[in-house]
Image (cartoon, rainbow, N blue to C red; front, top):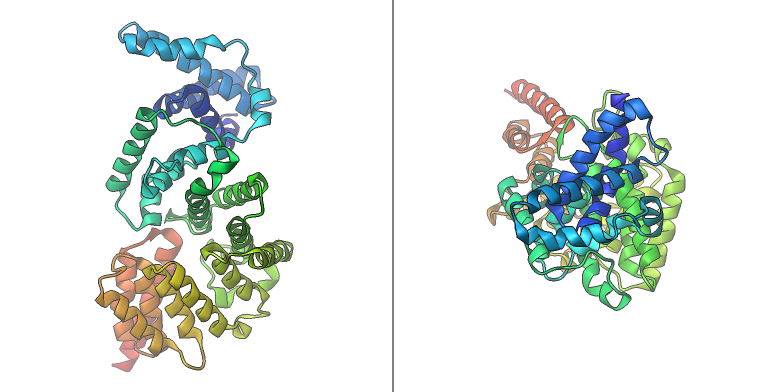
Length: 420
C-alpha cells in the first residue's frame, strides 16, 4: 500500500503544490503543507482507502494543515494574523475538485515565476525547482552553473515575489508577450532534463518529458493568437521525444543516433511534429525554437543515418547562432560540420572546438570534451582522444554517460597500445 501511495504522490505532487501556492500565496508554507498532507495520507489511506481524487484530497488536507500551522504560529507572531484571517475567510466554501477542474495551476505558477520583475535566470531557476520539482543540482547542470549559486538565486526570487506581492495568476492577454520568453525557456529546459537526465542511473525521465510536452500544448491553446515560437517549441519536443524508444537498450545504456533502430521511432509523433513546425515556419517569424525544430525535422525525415542532410543541419545551426550566439550552439554546429563529407569532417570540426576552448568557453561542459574526443578518435588519434574522454568523464554524473565514456576510454587505450 505504501508503495502505491508513494507512486500516486509522485504523480500529483507538483500539481498539488502549484494549487497550494496559489491558495496560500507562500512557497515555503505550501511546501510544508504538501509534506504534512503527504504524511496524513500515509497514515489515513491504508485504513480508509485511497480517495477517488487523491490530488483533491491532498489539496484539502494541505490547506487545513497550513491554517492549523498559522494558528499555532500566530500565538507568537501577530504579523501572521492577516494571512490567517484571509485563509480562514473562505475555508468552508472551498471545493478542491471544482477548483482543479477550472484552471491549470502549474501553468499559472509558471507565469508567476516568470514575472518580468524577476531576472530571467531567477525565473528559470525558480520555476524548474518549485513548479517542476527539479533538484538544484539538476538545474545547475542545465545552466552550466554551480548548485550553491542556483540555491541562492531561488531564495532571492521567492523573496522578491513575496515582497513585491506578485499575484499568482495567468496574466491578461495583453501581458502575455512580455512573459512568454521565460515560460518557453522553462518548458524547454524541463524537457531537456527529461530527455537526458543530469545525474544518476535514470537516462530518461519520461515523466518530465511528457510534462513539458503537456505544458507546451497547453500554452499553444492558451495564447490568443497563433504564436510561431510556441508552435516551434511543441514541434521540437514532439520530434525529439519521438526517438525515445530507440535511445536506450535493454540494459539502459545509451544508443547513439547513428546506431538507433529508426523503426522504433514514433512515426505518429513525428507526423504531428512536422505539422507543427510547418505551421510555425509559415506563420513566422522564425525564432530559435523553430530553427531547432527544423533541425530535428531533418533528422526525422532521413531514412537512415547515412542519408542525413548534414549540410542543411550545419546551415540551420549557423542561422541559429546568429539569433542565439551561444557556445553550445557553436558546439552543435561543429558536430554537424564533422559529419559533412564535403567542406567539413572531424578535422575541420576539431579546429572549431579548439577555438571555443581557446576563448575559455565551455571548459567545464562535458559534451564539448566528449565531442572533441570523438573527433580525435575518428581521426585515428586515440592517444590524444584519451585525455579528452577522461576530462568528459570527470565532468558528468549521469550513470549511462559515465559507462559510455568509460567504454570509449578503454577502446582508446587499446588502440593507443596497438599503435605503440
